[in-house]
Length: 238
Image (tube, rainbow, N blue to C red; front, side):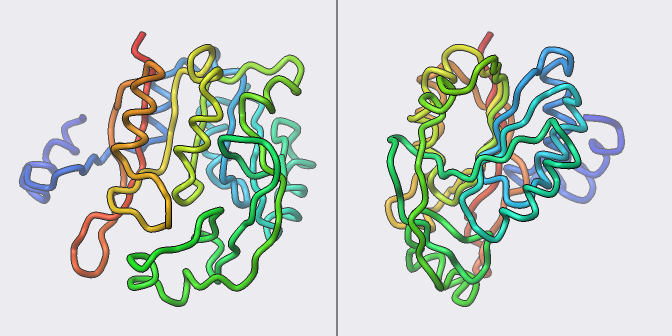
């Protein structure tokens, strides 16, 4: 932490704001992994590719596979991939088995999930979390998908799929225990989706695959002050 950040932590945050870091997670990832050693990224829950763009600023040589089953993002992802050959859209959902799944399309695309919203989510975001349509989408595991992709080398996985992160990790255990060195994932401290995973579940899974928690970023609270979600970087022990 630099002098300015230390000053802010002492004076503004007064060293009492738990789970708060002033570091940018993307800059942190660029420092944790040498850019010339990152050849492939997987972005699960890519939406329109904004996060992938920020990752590529840190790892400019990396080929990036963008997993996104939401139909509203297909045109945008196709457009950005034509402009940047490093980007490879995959219009697929990711989980712990292969087949199909029902995508619950919400009024706000950011709350769309393979899982149904629970009462905690709808109490705080009644309009945004309202399911307005359902669509059957192809479902893959990252491990099975990787076997079908020649010459791929994946060092980093980003996950943001509204409670489905644990299933995605379970379907990527071979990647996690071989080539992947860093995972950047959304974490939920209190569940917002029926059957979704919370932070403790993801933490246990990643530690079992040889990762340690590096830091937690951008924690969010609901209107009553309850801690709801954030993001975390996990780094391979070695």
